[in-house]
Length: 128
Image 1 (spheres, rainbow, N blue to C red):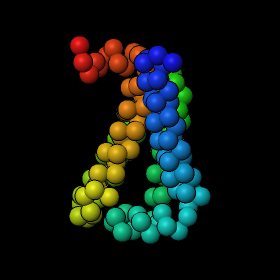
Image 2 (cartoon, one colour):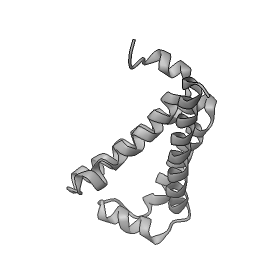
Image 3 (cartoon, helix red, strand yellow):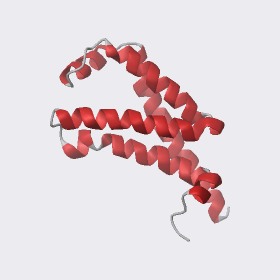
Image 4 (cartoon, helix red, strand yellow):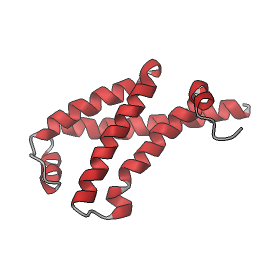
């Protein structure tokens, strides 16, 4: 396997890990597990918003998982992560475990997409 093939494989693995994690996160919101309502309450949001957030996440995740719409999905997921980051900053959550968690997820989402998409690498070259 050449270097480009390895990059695509690593990109697919990163994307798959992101989809797997976000898929579990989405499902717990859609089935309205009590922990979701408790967490939202800690963040200062009504616990009923869990379902709405789950639906938004599901739409973004499906868009990301479909190769043709993956770029749009990554952009929308970045917005979702930004909302989570802002919420944790507002209540002074721990930096590395809570506030930056959306950044970690974003690295998986964008890193995976970047490595598996030649068009994105052409659009945003990290080196010349």
